[in-house]
Image 1 (cartoon, rainbow, N blue to C red):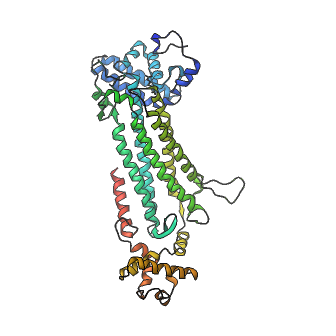
Image 2 (spheres, rainbow, N blue to C red):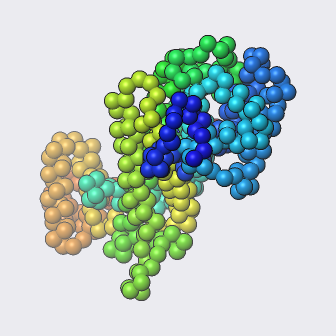
Image 3 (cartoon, rainbow, N blue to C red):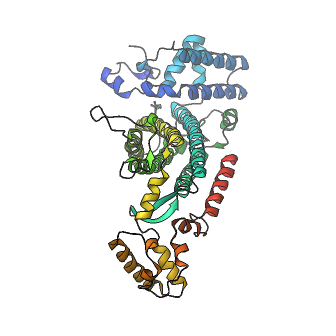
Length: 460
Ligand code: ARG
């Protein structure tokens, strides 16, 4: 077996089972670009600090460029016996440039190195999530703009309650996704912190310069405590939390699309690109993309649980348990990235069926609240107005008609406060238009929401 980098004090090799158990290179190879970037910054600063000559630093950086080219060209042989990406890269560097490669690890431990690589990686992925989210919001806003006039039965308890515009409904999701975006921004402040210079745990006797490495890498914040710097992964955990919430929001939308696509509702026709057929029932068009997204939400929440449990009860400082931090993040990232992008594309192509939505609005007494409010405005105590309206609903239901289909005389059986002007109030479109309170479903509020979201999108 090849001699381990840390093998100085060992006389026996590692068990094959242990090697397989402890390796992480099969997945952390994905950190190679960050590992190389971090090492190049470290080498340049080592030269500034007088540990390396400028020429040595240059040879290290060039060597690392060669390693990177080999990896990207598919010529790199990853070795499990080298455990992880860090040792694979460094040992290849040493093969290429000779013993000078061994100087790169001066004033550095894998503990601060892995923390840096992972932080750089998480930061890059969070920035990507933000791009996907911005596109998603942009699509939802565009679809909302098309459906400012479309009436949808707004529900509570999943029972038809009051009419809203489809735009208002879609814009509610925009608010969730906007908060998701902002949560990621906030998270990034704590991800983008430089841990290099913490060394193994206690700092180092070498005059290191984390500030200079951070500047080289375009990071503003530096660790305040070396023990904390190498031992916490809260930055990854809260990122996966932000991802879990993104998925949770997406899965709510998915659930609604699944229901809307059911022929009993028929509010949407799924785009062919995001539906599948049945191998046995020729008539079927199944909402698989939405179902998968709803299901994959469980995976991401599972990753969040994994990270919480890995971190729980860990004594100071670095513990090998921390190697279990990467797969949950990688898996969550893959799912979040694909899901946000697919939802945007699917929503762009979604076919809405306003007639079907209106059908439910008209069948469900969604203007009952209007009648109660109308009576209240005429001085009837609201509790009584509620009661009167309930009786009118029961009467209309018996006749299988809507409140708006009753004659004035019929309505006046329930209260002589009801006059001819009641009909303009019972009109479904008016239900939406008269809701002028800010943030409500009224057209002014919807317009405002759209323009605010557009301004926000232009600013991020
Ligand atoms: N592969 C390790 C990890 O992901 C790198 C750090 C190893 N440090 C150590 N002292 N064994 O956590």
